[in-house]
Amino acid sequence: MTREKWAAMRSGERRINIAKLCGWVNVYDPEYPADTMWIAPNGRIPSSLGAAGYGLLPYYETDLNAMHEAVLTIKCGVLQRRYTRNLLLIHGWRPDRSEDEIISEAMSDTPDQIDWRLLNSTAAQRAEAFVLTLVPEIE
Image (cartoon, rainbow, N blue to C red):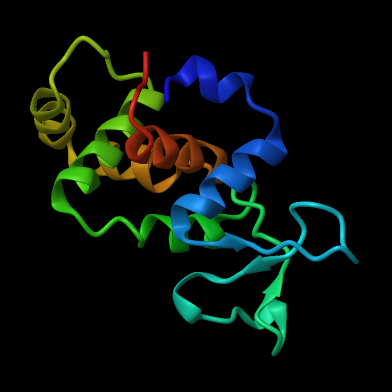
């Protein structure tokens, strides 16, 4: 996935892509419109879904709590570093640098500066970095 492809996607497409990356599964039910019935990931039933365990997806691009849960699904250290790199790039770091250079340069700033940029990332910025991290570029 590239930033250009992400920008060209509609909000609903983005939401579904993130949900699928987090493990949500779409369930077809003829009584409901397409893409409205979802089973929660890993057998967890979010309280918003009730006892049935299916329902609406989180609004990842506007909900920091939902993005926090999404980012927690990144377990691999390499992907965690790539997520950090992508988030830094969204904040304006130069893309011509290697992953290690970007992260090292960012961490060499005063802690207040780096914490401020990353900790204050919007849900939309985190969503973009999440998808850029987990969806490989196909050219």
